[in-house]
Amino acid sequence: MVNEEGEEELEGVEFGGGVLRMWEGELFDCFDDHQSAIESTCCPCYRFGKNMKRAGFGSSYIQGVVYFLLAIGAFVNLVAFVVTRRHYFLYLAVAFIVSVGTYLGFFRTRIRKKFNIKGSDNSLDDCLYHFACPCCTLCQESRTLEMNYVEDGNWHGRGDTICIGGFGEKSKALFGLHPPPILSIKSSDESYMENNTNVLHLSSIPYDFTTYFS
Image (tube, rainbow, N blue to C red; front, side):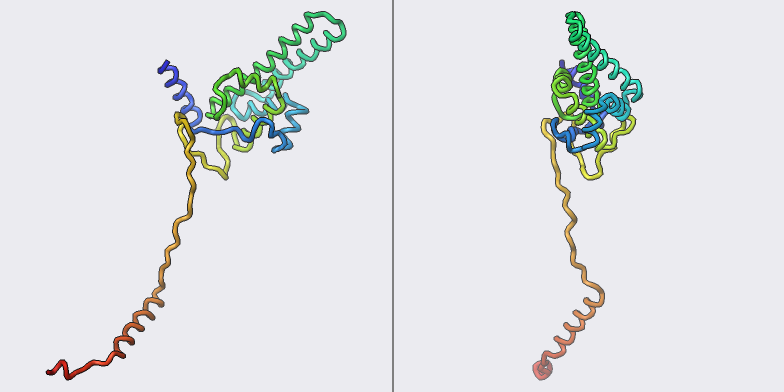
């Protein structure tokens, strides 16, 4: 059991650099990125293929075509059941729907593990997200990959954030960066004027010579 946990941790460190990351936004924050929301709703096959290309999980065309075939299989069998009322079409439609959710959930799990994204450690939850709201889930994955400039499986990260933390930590440490203190440095002219002022002040003090010669 300990060896398995150690292997999983090493795998996460190997892929994600040992850094804990987060999904960009919540699951239902679809309209934070309007373009991703529109593409995920109107053309999810294209959006999914694009995500897979960014994450380094194969060709965008192949992944998009696989998604399209599974989705069209579910749709055709569902229509066939409505028209013919034959139950085996319904069973086929359900099988294709389960296949779509499982396929998308599988790659969501791979994205999460590859880049050490904090979330549910259960792969079943990733599948359920795609069953419950596939467009919102796909949009969240798109926002995370695009906003962090993920290209060909390489996570470049956002320019306005710094992520500090270890993969094995229970909580993520946050550090604030503060500017260095401002030191007041006097110029040479100011130091020269100050020294002259001290000399004039000393010369103005009266000196009793009788005390010296007595």
